[in-house]
Structure formats: structure tokens, C-alpha cells
Length: 117
Image (cartoon, rainbow, N blue to C red; front, side, top):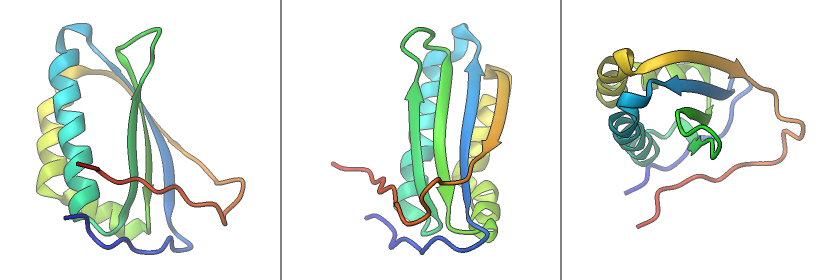
């Protein structure tokens, strides 16, 4: 069951995580990324968005649109068991990682992201 989501606070985070994966690890990396995204959205009220996309021209380039209701929600997320499994399990798979914090152009707009069965 999806967690009831918290509202975005003043210190909320909107981020693009740009990841380049070594080709030989791509399939396994995708499994980790899908798992952590699903668990985070379903169980963490402060994880508002976790939408991962794969570049069509270069499948080793992954971008994740993430949003967290607050700095505290982000800290809780990166301390979670499922995130630590992802992070530790994929360290050797990631060639490059760039975390790009963003500011919404229209703070009144809202992205809804959920796992649907």
C-alpha cells in the first residue's frame, strides 16, 4: 500500500540524479533502481517523486527525477535499509553520478508519482 504523502515544505528537495552506468552492469543496475524506487514510493511519506528514465540513444544514461517533502525526509530516505541496499549494491556499477538540485518554475504545480499494479 502506498504511504500517505507529506506536503512539500519550504526546505523540500527537487533533484535530477544523472547516472552513467557501466554497460556490463546495466541490467543488474536497473533491477536495483526499480526496486528502490518502488519501495521508496510505497513506504516513505516524504518521498514524493522517484521517476527513473533511460536515455533512448544511450541506455547506460539514467536520469531520476526525485522530490522529497523536506531535508529530513531526504535524510530518512538515504538512511533507509532499501536505499542502503541500492547504494552499496551499485557502487561498482556507476561510472558517473551528478546530483542536480532544481527549483520548480511554478511552485503551485505538483507531480504525482505512484506505483500502479
